[in-house]
Length: 472
Image (cartoon, rainbow, N blue to C red; front, side, top):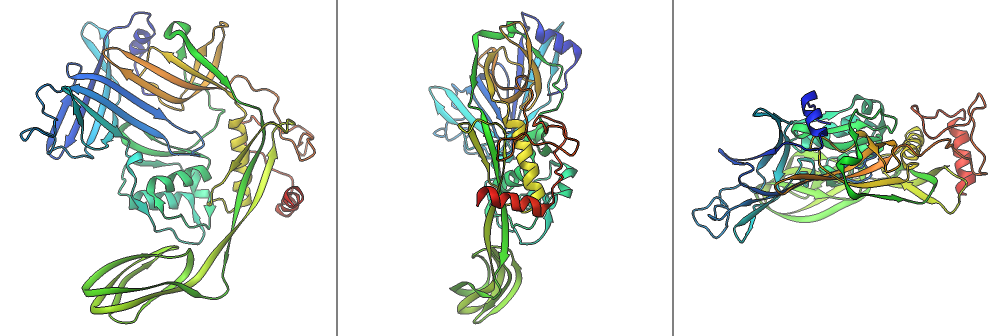
């Protein structure tokens, strides 16, 4: 939640609010384009974050402005459309009238344009998304061998040219031997965050954050009363009971002998920089039938090098292929065999302790099955994953986690919240394959909802034997 003053909190809780102010600033090259309430027709700001990073967050902004003069019309030869960088940086800031001419401005949110504007009937429409959502180029420099998740995240962010980031130090103690796959920088960060039981998102001022998530965090002081919710504005849904959580453990093996990974003919005239891709492997050696190779960098499934010469040469890559198999562990959450089964698959999970920890963290979160979709007056200081209290029609307050927050503006502000209720779960335990509650060394039942991960009394070999018994 963005930091606000007591005066702001009091004014926003009043039944009748004062005016909302908005500033949107686009920086393109040396030019700055500023839009205020007088220019803005509508805004939609969406922040949708999965707490467990099982998917990428959706962090988008769309807005439209009055453009009767055609300044942003691509058909206008003297307009601004051609000069506008299609990926220009953009900030949006919400302000609120506290009375007596005093405006309190919230922290800025940073975005980048997703292309140039479209124009229709004197209205120019813009779309933008966060820096994280703009990391669409591929990362291909993954390598085989033990590395911390912190190191992996740092490598990906550095390769993407990102300088504003926050990686929690907890990832320094989590390791994997798996190479990152060739995919977008954003997808790589999502895999890392998911394996580390962290949330991946963009926070204020455009900082990309990877931070551990726990449902046991204490809600903020924000309260959403009934008089802030639209009439019939609370839609409640509940999904089926969670039966069990499964998670794959990925086991990587090296081939005993070398094999040809890549062979291709290329034409060279002078000096050329070459990028190639091949099967996932290690110990790669690159040779050429002619010319001079230099600046060779080999990765798990790709390589970069420079070749100097004139002619047609055969490039050959030899190395040891890496094969992968999986082992599944699962924990039973209820005795209802007709309930839902959640399956977690992440190729960075190469350690059984991380596998168990992910199962436990996922089970903690997915036990909450009740969701509220709430249309309300709109509080732009709220962020996804804020913990809040919401008043129900039964005159009680529930604690809830903000999953999605949409702010709309069309002269007046309003919002939509998707909330995960955190108040409905009590006495939920781990079950074994015989539907018997699992107990710890003191004979106490292992509760799913807790503040600490469950530490098993069994050795890894005993756990492996149990996995074999369960899955055959």
